[in-house]
Image 1 (cartoon, one colour):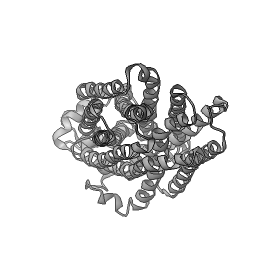
Image 2 (tube, one colour):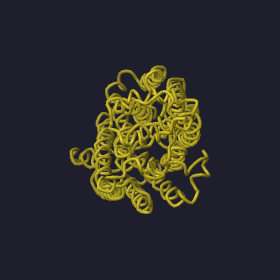
Image 3 (cartoon, helix red, strand yellow):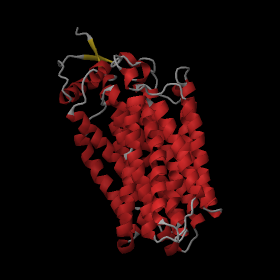
Length: 453
């Protein structure tokens, strides 16, 4: 009988081939659609307020229902990904949020809109943990932070695309057309993706009946193995059960609790901006085009910040990189709270501050997925990431009410709330024990990375 091959060593000891990069790109594309859908409501709220004759506060429950769906979807789809496969759960999530977005134009009031956003949120929340797990498990451990970051950074990238398209199409085609496009495109992608995207090698290694599929996938990655090869994952035997309770085992508990706190605080800050920044700027007297420029700057800054954060984590490790980004985000939000934001104020400094603050907040938020993927092993990786994000979604849910309430007291209070949220995220991240090591600490350890590999 042929000796077993350690799948962790096969992946970690090899290079990052063109095929693996292609897989990460495909996975990232699914999150572009997720980001687009996330931003559509925020772009459309000012138009809906005028069309339906309702105040901004009427959309607080709508925003919160959407994030409640994302919270539930992340937990359920994370468990599904660990049990039935990351690819299955990811594609199913795309179908759910694509279909619910497609039918959103049928809504004629905030109650129906809230229900549809809740259902769409089930898919939106389920896509990210499975995409993060899939990206993490296709690349060597030394490239994991940048692969996961490149995937999750597509949330603000997709949001940027939604803002850019919204500013051009919303006046002429209306909000309904935006939602039709935002739903139809991911449905088409979900039909094609199973033909192009393979299942995670680490997931397949745990299922002997799927070893032939794994051998074919490894062959495309440039790792040719005999047809009778047996597999094991020696570095990840410590977590044998797929359950949320496993995340509170002694090996993970001290990291799970602060990680959940960090996700909660950072997602509160992120979704305060996603959902209310356009309304804040239009309320300050700016026209819709300028308001969309503001959210676009925030999101584009987020793309740059996340990519820079992923690189910084690979070089110096996640603890210093993430704490510095959180600290700069606090400073940026406080600066915005003290700035003059009015139609008579110079626009350039406002846009620049939004871009810098967005870079740092989104940089922390996206790299937290890489941190979570590092903390948890294969057996519970999608569950670990999914439940951390789902707990964080309670912050997103609160953003619907916190944002509306803060704006009633002016933009100064709004940005101070964001600064407070990022301050608490800083404290939580500092408490996480198992941070991603930097390049110097990883030399000579490839393939023997312990339970987090």
